[in-house]
Length: 79
Image (cartoon, rainbow, N blue to C red; front, side, top):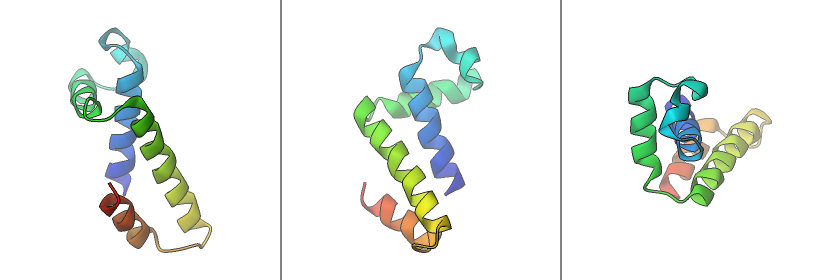
């Protein structure tokens, strides 16, 4: 789930920043360009929804409302 969270976060930052802002995001240029390319497959609203969904899933699992592994699998299958 950690890789999924970081990829969604990177897509969110890349979709809301220009290439000139790459250094400001803290991402390396290669990572920024890969995230930007992935972000083109989604609208900004979809990326925000993915981010909110994965954060919600994480907090619900830690609050005891379910298993993180199962919830992550369900999240992926819902895409």
